[in-house]
Image (cartoon, rainbow, N blue to C red):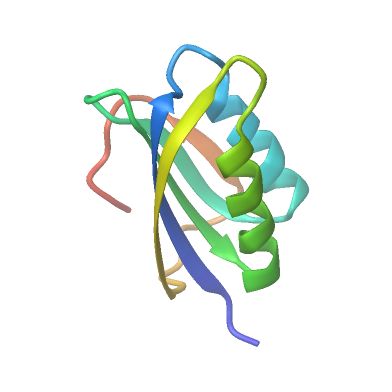
Length: 98
C-alpha cells in the first residue's frame, strides 16, 4: 500500500508548551517522516508521511496534545505522499511547504 501524506493545522494553546517536541516524539515512534513548525498566528503546522494507519495514530495524539497544551481545533488534509525526505524534524519559524 502506498504511503499517504497528512497535513495538519493545530489551533489552541500549542506554542510554548512543548507541542512540537511532543509531535516529533510521536511521529518518530510511529516511523513517520516529515516536520512540524510554529505558524506566525500561534498555530502549529504538521506535515507527515507514511502508512495511513500510523498517520491516523499521529492524528489522534495531535488532538490530545501534551500536558499543558490545549487543542481547540485540528484542520486535516489528506493526499498522496510527495516525499518529504527522511526523519521527522522541528522547523524553526513558519514554512510555506516542502
